[in-house]
Structures are given as structure tokens and as C-alpha cells.
Figure 1 (tube, rainbow, N blue to C red):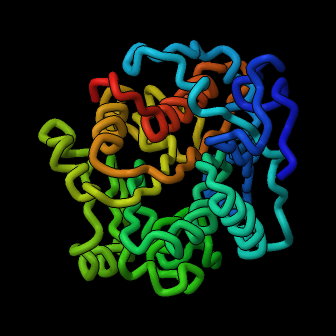
Figure 2: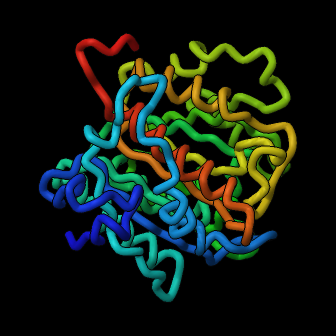
Length: 307
């Protein structure tokens, strides 16, 4: 795999802290797909905005009490290119993620719109019969396509669990969705027919959430984590195509991700739907820090670490 020079990649590390692809544990995959957005635009610039903000992160993690990047051995791939159709682009992304898994890496994809997940999930679904998805979002994303596009961002999770491209494994996937506060009438029949494997934790009920109950669905399983930044409250994350009130705050999300990392094996992740706003770097920084925290919780381990 070709990788970017360390000074151009996530965290923009100096050469003395850089590693090569062979020694990397986590690989950043910039995938700025923007093809089916239906309100605000700009997701194509999300991956680079996260990379540009990342040098400002404090590398020491006060929760894990270490500098996780030294354990992650991060490298960054060149941006994935959009092909003629979304379907073709997702096929190309699938091939990249498959190779990363063959090479024993942890793929961390930066979107781009949420439709990316329908491609990045496929190699995991083939590899792990017990795969579950931990999903943060304002929207259920269970439409059967939207505005004529089968792989629309509004159908992202539906395509993860019912698409032929997951080669029959989708029907066995468990989906745990957190922060949902928008679902269309057209999604309800599919949701109600699949309640045995789709567990929605509604934003309206956040005050009564039990984090341990949420992550219990994931216990002992391999988990793919997908985080649409509009899952966060609009007062915290406005730089997204469909900002919504009533969402998660930072501590809410961190509590779930950390608790999940203690009961399951997070094998890959994506952060998507950042649409940068010029001059408002706080949103780019938040998304970059979110990605760093996800990788840190997923991959950091120490016999002296009190989980």
C-alpha cells in the first residue's frame, strides 16, 4: 500500500515518530465521497479537514494515561477517488479495506457522506460471522434508497444489513443505533420486521439510557463502529449536512464507546458527514479527536490499564 509522508497524514507526525506500512496497526483511509447529499454539502472536504486539524490534538490521553499514538503506529493512505457511480466507488473502497484486513490492519475511514459505510463494511461482514454494528447518528438510515439512489447516505445502514454485497451475512448482523431522532414512515416496516436485530436507542430517551445495557448487545462480538457526526447535538456539531437538536454530547458518546471497547472487539470504524465551515475549526478538531479516541479505545491495551 502506498502511504502519505508522515507530515501529510493524520497527526502529521515528525519523521522520528513515523512508521512504515508494515509496522502500522491503524490505517487512515480518507474517503471524501459526496454524491447523494440531500441538504447541506461539503462532505468531500471532511477527511482533509480532519487531517489538517489533527496536529493540534494533545496526544496524551488522560483516560488511558498514555500517548496512544505510540501504540497505534498510524499511517495514512492517499485519498480514495470517486468513480463514475456510487456503486463503483464503494466497490473500489471495499477492495482497499479488504487488503488492509488481509494485512492485519485496523481500517479507520474518514468520510465523506455516510454511504461510504455500505462499502467499507463488506470485508468485515465476510470475515466475522458474529459481526455487529455500533452506529451513532441522528437518522436511522434504514430507507430502501432515497431520491432514486440505491446507495444514498439516507440508506446507509439499510445497505449494510440487506445488500447482496455482504454476501448473505447481512441477515445475521446486529445493529445498535444510538442517538436516533429522525426516522421516516417508509423505514418503520423494515425496522419493525427486524427488531430482533436492530436496537435503536432514541435521542428522546437519553436521560434514561443505561450504557451497560446498550453495549450488552455487543458483548463478545466483533464490532464495526460507524459515527455520523450529526449524531452529536447540533449545538456541538453544526458542520454537517443535516444538523439536528436533541443529540449526544461528547461525554455521552465517549461513555458508550469506552464501555463497548471493554466488552467487544472493535475491528474497524469510520467517522463521516463532517462538512467543514470555513473559519470554524472547532468542528474539524472535534471530528479529528473523535477518530483518535475511537482508535485509542479500540486498540490500546496494557496489563496495568484499569479498564
